[in-house]
Picture (spheres, rainbow, N blue to C red):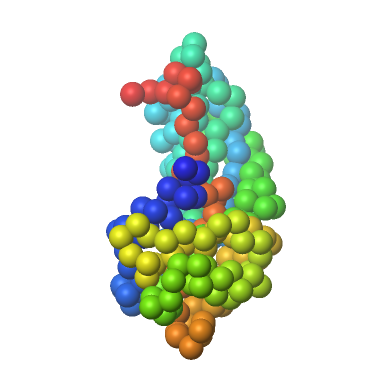
Amino acid sequence: MSPTEGSATKEMSLLTLNERDTTKRTTRPRKRDIGRIRVMGYSIDLPHDDVVNALRKHFSSCGEITDVCVHVLTDNLLDSFGFIYFLGGQGTVDRAMQLSGTDVGGWNVTVKPYPFLEDADWDPVAIVQGYDTCLGKTDIKRMLFDHFSSCGQIKDIKFQRSSIGLASVYLYGEGAEDKVLDLDGSYMGGCKILVKLIPSSGIYTVHPRSRHLGWPR
């Protein structure tokens, strides 16, 4: 099971679209909501927590920080560059860039943008509810395929194990996320459907940690 499929299954089991009045139409921040930078300049033999805390404090004025990641290598030395994630999109990156070259407690930080890949948000999942469940799965799949084909390439359509009334539509294509949300409240086969977006698994607010590195426990 792919990360996207796992996320979709979890979302389907924990949340129904009838709860949409108290939840956002997306389950995670989208690419345009996240700013990422790469930072350098610290000595690699400094204590890990000291560097992370100094970076978090130094860049706190740029926006809400969701992660500061500095990898620890197997020899207990720090990697020569780290990553900082913000909520707030490109504006947070622009503000962080203005701090490049400034002093961070005895060393000068170098800042570079670290954007996501262009197609990182091209494979969202649409969670759909509200269609006619008196139809068979084959007919429902056909209707879902026709209805969501305008959003991009449809890779798969799956139903929740416990209910035919909740389906996941796996998509791929530029702008697919916005197109999916445009179909929330639309009519399919005479029924008004509810659509919830699970953004692409390639978009995240916490930097991946590699298990083989000497990560502090």
